[in-house]
Length: 467
Ligand SMILES: Cc1ncc(COP(=O)(O)O)c(C=O)c1O
Image 1 (tube, protein in one colour):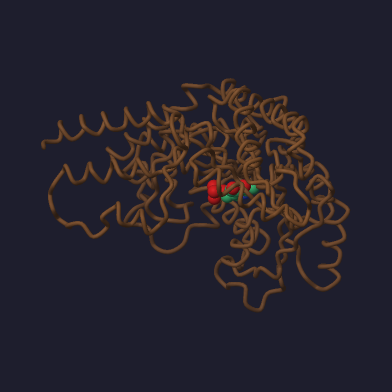
Image 2 (spheres, rainbow, N blue to C red):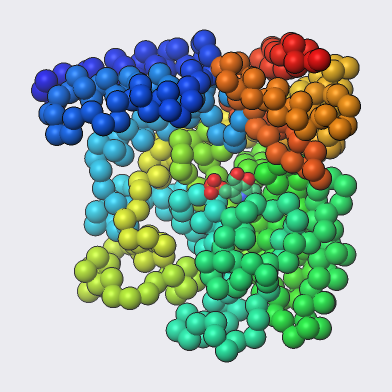
């Protein structure tokens, strides 16, 4: 098979996969043992056989979860915007690293352009940004930047012998914060989980108490992260109140908008959920979640501190890569990046941005909120279902109603039946020990009818499981 034939065949396979992504089962579920047999994992290496390669591709697609299916409401991302898919393919074909202008000239300018757009939209001035490998790492880089700004000797001297540093997050913050505290030598014991109100939002008075307690104990509070859309409940911490506390305590205020940060694109939702954002010190947002870019696609911005990233993150001798001899036409992203090789993620985001426009993407986020409101009304309407906690934004946490003592086991069995039957794949989590199914809408093609069908199937399968 020559290259022409290979690309032709590949596009045919991709085309027919995309065309059937919304049909049939959400997943052809097989147990890991069954799947290992089907996949012929031990088939010949170096067989040079393109038919065998396409056979594996077909199997990969057949047994993968169809993330563009209306029943895929499991995670924060779905099938991927088409311009973004095009960008992803082109990035793979032109395979380069976005670490320098020299090796990735167009990508560097796309990234710069997108950062300027996003700084402006977030209301950040004299700021800077970078695309990272997702919000987990963006949270970690934000915490690291805060740590090194707090104490500029840490980069060289390390944390040994320093006063204990403390970071503060809401009790429902994402686990990447715990990982960051671990990686950065803060220690998870110094990541203070602040109490939440009944909606799952951080209580500013509780934060104040925690800050005062740490200071009284000789610790140094250097970092607070507000979550803009918590992972399970979708709660937005009150940024304005935290900005007020920062004036008093001087910490770095980061906003983790991995999930709900997409609201920044809609002036209406920005006012509702992100008031005060323009006074934060840093902000992260995943384009691969609500905004539909293919995984991974993320941005981390910092406010009012140009050139901080390169001061904090550069280390060692990178002179073989980063040009300094008077030929530096544009700042390379590699100097401020965690890793050396960088994926070209800016191309897909740029293409999405130009194709849908800020307004189109904002309208999409607003529409998701409307669908979640509708989903909530259906849960309330159906006697078989109940909301476990109030819905405040994009997350609908519900369960099938049975006696409290049976509720977790029953709902777990229900979710498993829905998954393994290929009907739908819905997220699950525990809130105060209660198992909930978490419905998220992140597919631009989802309609009210899809939402109705989703609950109809949950009820139908649930009814069938009743004793
Ligand atoms: C609130 C929040 N922060 C951070 C993350 C991590 O994002 P990523 O998957 O891009 O690392 C998530 C992922 O679900 C999240 O919900």
